[in-house]
Image (cartoon, rainbow, N blue to C red; front, side):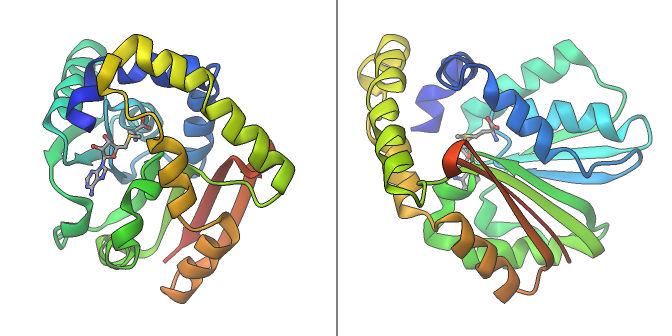
Length: 222
Ligand SMILES: C[S@@+](CC[C@H](N)C(=O)[O-])C[C@H]1O[C@@H](n2cnc3c(N)ncnc32)[C@H](O)[C@@H]1O
């Protein structure tokens, strides 16, 4: 599915979020500092990676991991165009099989990926923990189904109209019309995901939710 969407994914993302997706990604990059080594889990077309590269600077390094070759191809083209000063590389790999790092990461970040991984959340979080330095952190942003019934109604009404329209215009029959709402519904609600992070051994777990809980930012430390 992601291979089929890659070519117009950025356009779809930008229009359906009214440009807000970029703002939420920027919030996820808040804890990044110069010189950090960062993993972007499910990097897609590389937006978060390139933002991370600007923040970690010349002494930093960013690795983007994704299982979709077509998404990575777009990310590589963007990298070639932008040529950030930080070292940036992309690996085609499943989030489920994070390699054991000889040089562990300072931060693992991800944007709009978690809910796609709902079946394997625990093993993936274990892999993330293994890949991090002691004191390293995670910063994840994703859509969630709002807790409040009214916000939930608004969210579903919006998702089933505007993105559905753009989706069909941009991707034709390839647009998976109910995928966004279904994946958000299957995924844990924000408070439960925060609890899971604590159960898995993360410390200082913080959650910030936006737009009635349609989008949540999770930050925690190993
Ligand atoms: C909605 S896109 C988000 C892309 C990007 N992070 C962004 O901010 O736009 C989800 C991405 O996660 C990737 N993905 C989904 N499941 C994955 C898995 N199990 N392992 C690796 N990548 C995965 C998809 O290929 C896709 O690029």
